Image 1 (tube, chains in turn orange, blue):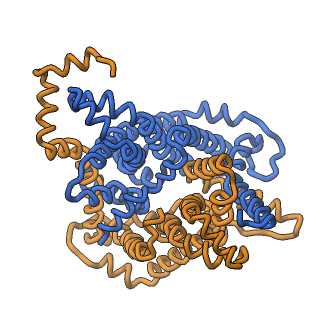
Image 2 (image 1 turned 90 degrees about the horizontal axis):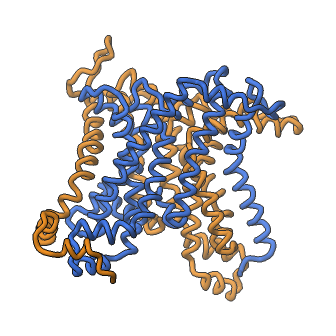
Length: 299
Length: 280
């Protein structure tokens, strides 16, 4: 250890910094409080406070002529969402979409995750992890926009299909399904890869020794063991689809939970606020089920 | 190796197809930025860089770029300060309600962006705040904290407290210990976290729409103009620019933090587990 003069000078008794330091050393609660005050204040007041205001807003009334918010308690907004069939239809359509996207992502994620975890050399594996990770962070608006051009009548897909005499209406629910599947795919690949990597090699060998062929090993050993990781990935694919409004806006003309909230918030903020409780409720249930399936240990 | 030769070939094929799928849109954006024509038709007939100079001289885009940079810088600074404080508290103390704090930190990215956006909008409307740079920064910082926090906490977990205790035994006070012992070890993790926070804020659009009022960040400018056929060529250029500027810091961050840590845009295992422990 070098004897740093600054350090030694400060080590002597006295200075205000030293006294403060001693004070905190003897009072860990005060030290903790000082560390936590700013970030907790920000999150409690700024964020939880906002969520609380959103909750309150959902119970407020609107003047039906001026569309202005009237600060009177009412359950009408929730009643409207429960009773008007449009809202229910949109909610089901969104949940169905989220489920289909999740299934597609799980299927697509498997080969690359499996290759990364069990076939690739460590060097290739690292390259692949970065190759999957970096686009995950690239602007999601730009990616959705890119798909808008790819799926258009003059786009890449229809150009590729033309020689086959086929045409694909990209601005449709199927197109949107493709885009969502694309957007959240890395969120599925990474946990599945991590899950596969955790399975001990010996289990695969044991299965092979006992006569299990590749397919049998895969379906009887690998798949059950990696299932929690798939559920973990599905939390993201499901939740992100549920609340999104940009991709539906760009790709499809159909309404989804996100687009309804987005269209409503300027017109009728209380109804929009009430409708946000649909994705919140669905995600709460989803997380509870995922926890039962041990998904959180696989994250 | 248990996998047969045929399986491995098939897997390699699958990897190729998946990577092609992942990179196709990014390549298409890049190519369209050099499209000479104003109509967006594939394949492109003539290539040109003229739209780059058009975009460069567009005053709206310059304003949006400036606002985006200010926002990302502001949100990153707030996130570094709050995220570091939190990570120190969470990794060096155990206290009642720790899990609740963890839940609170990840909530802004666990809930759909539209919920966060609308909540902030409802609050701004109720309180009567006028929209400006600050309202956007508040929104962005809220979901950027978790990124810095995750990186710092992952690093702290590996460090243990021994060196800090040694430093105190040798007579350093808390601040000296932080500055000379803890911080140097945290530095790369914090840098990686702040690069990711910058990237996250730089291309955010979902929350920004609700918190920006009439101003435009670059992503908002894209969103406002992408339905206008006239603006398409410039949108392409800006889109390429946005994606390049967000990918570079993320790539550097992966080098700094090690790819493993980086999957932590997703909250790490402990945080999610804690979140669910405390869920209703």
